[in-house]
Length: 229
Image 1 (cartoon, rainbow, N blue to C red):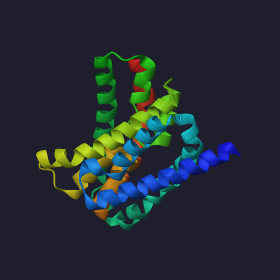
Image 2: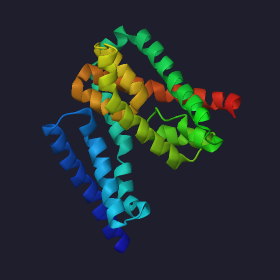
Image 3: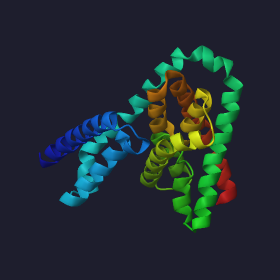
């Protein structure tokens, strides 16, 4: 009974925090004020200040986590609506996403090696640029702890969404496909949600990039792991 009460409070509290964070973002729209960023910070502060353990919070957090799969599937709708545009740019999309997938995996590996982290941690870092369910399975297949992989996926997603607008502006990247492919390859579903806010075309390109990237990364990481480990 106590566990149920804690789970309900955790889930309801998370939803309320998100609603508040979204209203804050609507008033102060900056990359750093995205609901995923401010909401995460608020929840961390609440947990630390009240002494609530992560395990207790996740009694309800898992209910929300289970909605991640259907949310990813829902991204197929804008993909369907932009199918003609995606057919026109199929090969540029395929080549760009493949390059992005390799860049995400190799940058994670070499930066981790440069930082001197251990092999199990590197195994969790490698799939950081793909959506959480895929990253956790891929990390587990090469000996990395799945919960750590989920953490790195969050870091990559939030970091990419915050940095992307400044990077696009600095590099003068204005084409919706280029922006969508870039953010979808690097920041998976979190980046795609932000791309959909910008435009449906950018969101569709990001959805394709996220989906293709998940497939490519799940193939190349086990192969590269044979060379790396």
